[in-house]
Image (cartoon, rainbow, N blue to C red; front, side):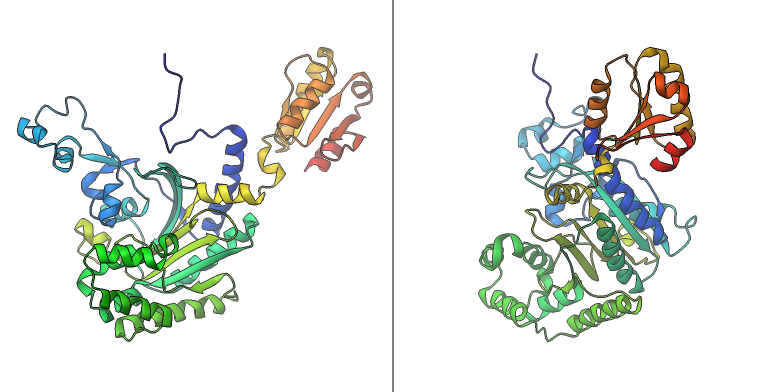
Length: 442
């Protein structure tokens, strides 16, 4: 029998890891709630007709398809099978796919429930997504996204609040050295105009999006291979390097970014950690306005958050009403990896209990259970060591689980009702009444 294994690009999360992940998720969730967002969930699978054509050519190739139920080859012709045309065959044997992100399912939900929701509609969503990508450090095939979107308004106040949410979340997580990059699809469209690539925008955007990975020479090579002239390529990089784009479309983009920055300052915040990056493109084809990307500096990992404004996504589902939306996605897995590398998780994020009740022998177990009940009644996460073991074994268990306090009950404690409370981090040991212990721990 083969040894059990996991598909590449997926992971198990042990209890210690999950405790840290929960700390991370709950922190970001708290920020979303603070800014007025409500929770939403959508199914893991969507119809392929919902997913395809929304992410650009490269995104479509990374969709995980789900085989139709039953005998999925029953109605496929022999000619099609013999052609070995995977694209045509797939469309005949697969109608559903795993969601690639949370934005497109959200847009689908809005269109289906337009008459039940109140606009502007603000929702956050924290669920796994799947991409048939090549696994590497910081890049997984199954990973969680943590999104907040507002749809039904084109006000740039929403963009400003995205910047404020990112700053608030990172402040609470203890992340201090990071950069929020912002650009505008109008700026990039203006760049395409001056370079004579208006009809080839997507090719340009996808290539520019790789600048930080493959550099200018790599992007030049990719554009050449896609048939873009050397003159157009030179114009693109001349404009990027000089930060000058003579285009009304670009001017509108620059004005929007200036307005967003102005709103951030009117809130009483600053523009520290924020920069306008002309080279930021974000490859997803549905963005139409401001776009965002966040990087944690001094860690070997890609962007940890990204998003932007989309004006036409709901219309892709046949909606007659044009609903503009804007959103941000936090990459939980990458932020986790960065925080691990920077040692930013607080010690108590790994402990499920605050107190371990330790009985010196089984004669005190009944009293220990009453004490445990009182601790829990006072909202103190606690547990009892269930077996009759020596005290050193019980304290070792608490230490391995990062439980900060041990409450010890022996004959002396049982008679006096003054229990020994030991701080397992400092080593300090006191005798207190149960009420005194509850106040100390809380």
